[in-house]
Length: 142
Image 1: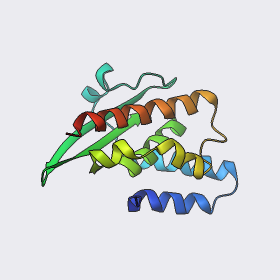
Image 2: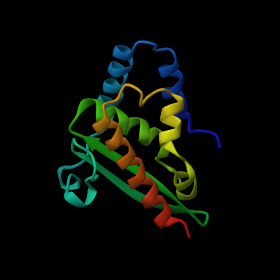
Image 3: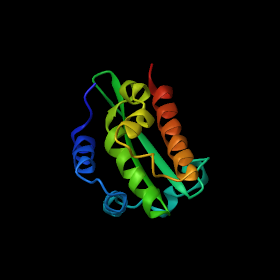
Image 4: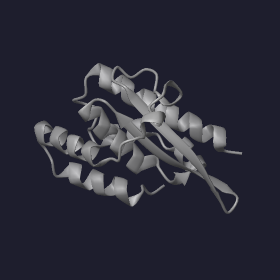
């Protein structure tokens, strides 16, 4: 399964950055470019459990041609986690629910070397975000 172009662009950019300080800066830039959620979207029902920082994810189903895609938006109060949210959105948002449910972002992040320098808490939070997105996608697969 091919990855969406926005995600592929991020992966290509990361491949040029050998230094972790540069990768962290890039993550922060990606997060800063994300549009913020509305205040009424930063509520407990959208909050991701298992993240040490605050993370909210909003997924909106979009039906077309008999299948459901998910448009996903998100935000975190932590700069690096906000960058991880940006990468997850590039990978998952606006894709068919079936593809989202079948795509293991953790394995992809590991291939890119994105988890090796994350703290245990950030890594656990990443897993929680992925599990939440994939669970919502599975619930939309008929």
